Length: 246
Image 1 (tube, rainbow, N blue to C red):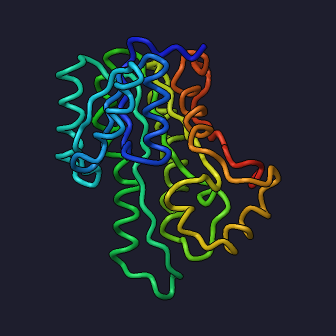
Image 2 (cartoon, one colour):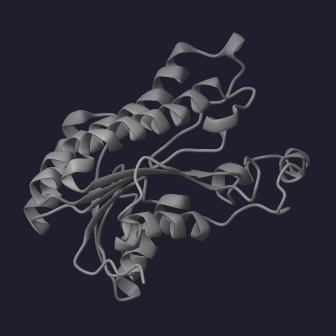
């Protein structure tokens, strides 16, 4: 089940957190993973995959730079000859109440979380169409579904990923390319660890399952959507949030 042998997967933001967990799990299921991140930040992810017997290469990319994205995708095609899976995971947060939010904080979040997904998808869509097969999976957030005070930029970018994915799913379905979204809730990552104990307790109180999620639980959802078992699923949002939003 969920056999990805022979598949080539690009994972952006693969240096840590959800991105690293996704890259490691896809590789464990047989995919050749292109772990993409700024500079050499994905090197540790690649080492972990290779130490476990998997196949991976690191790719340096600035997802906010179209030229950099195109070079990353071009390099993957040159080395592997195909791209089967794209996971748009790279993301940042610049939280602030709208009244005090700086325009650059809005622009940076939108560029990294939303426009980068457009650039990456546009770069892989042509080879996927030629193959008549592909999987595009973007990591949104429960915040993009319900909103959160102090995160208008982040919520807008994550909600935008949902609309973008649904529209693209309609465009490419005839070529056997599926486009879906995974929307995590509160996951145990570096970002959530920065929350004070009290704030984290307030959040957990809103989760029916009563705990934070693990990065591996998000990765499992991505792995499913990347697999042949999900071949009849497109334009959907798979929530991994412990019941926080239902």
